Structures are given as structure tokens and as C-alpha cells.
Amino acid sequence: MVGDGWASLTALNDEMPDHDHGSTVDNLDHGFQVSEHLECWRKEYVRTGLVHPNQLIDDPDDVDGHMKVESIGETLRAGEPLPAVVLIHQPDERGHPYQLIEGRHRYNAIHREGWPLIFAWVAHVSCCGGPGPDL
Image (cartoon, rainbow, N blue to C red):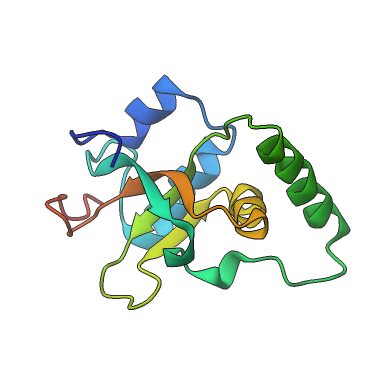
């Protein structure tokens, strides 16, 4: 874990703006009944293999997606840091307790490059001492 305290998604976004912030907020609202103001977030390094693989690009015709992933892979190989991906921790999901909310191409690049850890903003809703949904 990188940060000790809880933060809101708004605070994390103020610290390092996410160009997909609106989409992240929508996904949290509709999928998890969580607002961007709920202080349930921590900055963490998560084992890449614990992120559910349902967001891995497996469509060979997704040329744009594969190109984005390769470009991000070049960034990783150059040793440059990437912005955090956005995850939600779901400890009841055995084997893959983290679900990707935002950052699909970054996640795919890190997975393809074989990096053991991924830097993430992780929502802990009703787990790990985090609060329950607020919407």
C-alpha cells in the first residue's frame, strides 16, 4: 500500500487528473452506487495477476486497442511511470479480487510486459475498513 489514509476519488483526481474521470464516476455510480466523494480510496501497488482478466484485449481485429497497448508498453520499457489505473477491491471474488474500472490499455500493457505489480487507485467499499456505498 502506498497511502495510509482514506481519500475520495475527487481528491485523488485533484492530485493527478485522470482524463477519463467522468467515465470513472459514471462506472462507480451505476455499477457500485458509490459517489466520487466517498472516502474509500487508497493508492496501492496490486499484484497484476489479481486483477480480473475480463478486461484483457482478446479481439485480434481491435487494431487501435493493440496499438495503444504497444505504445504504452514502449513507455514502460523506457522506464517511464504510468498514471494509476482505477480498481475496486471485491474480496469475495476468489482468485481475482480486483475489478478494473478505468485504465484498460494501461492494464493490458502491464500484463503483456509481465510486470508483477500495477499502480492503482483502489476503492474499498464495505471491505478493508472502507465505508459502505453512499448513493
